[in-house]
Length: 78
Image (cartoon, rainbow, N blue to C red; front, side):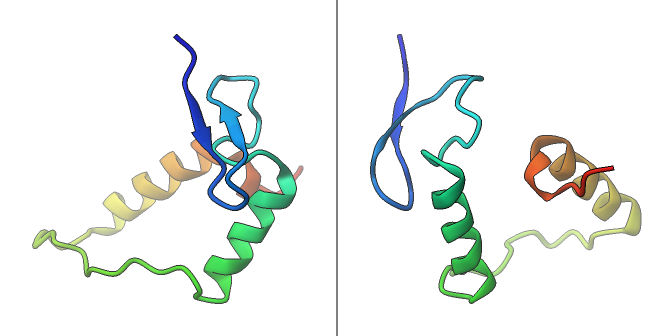
């Protein structure tokens, strides 16, 4: 079964598989439009974090490492 999702920016249907480089977006353009919306604070998380566990430096570093591994878009080329 092939999963298809709507691009969050333009609503075009996107097939969800490894070859879909920009998933859930249909293109680099839509990905950058969404990033710009976050940067301009058009998008925001509406509820505060529910966790009562304070984040340690090690926890933050682990989260950042995991994020960068899964989001090559944010890694500067070497």
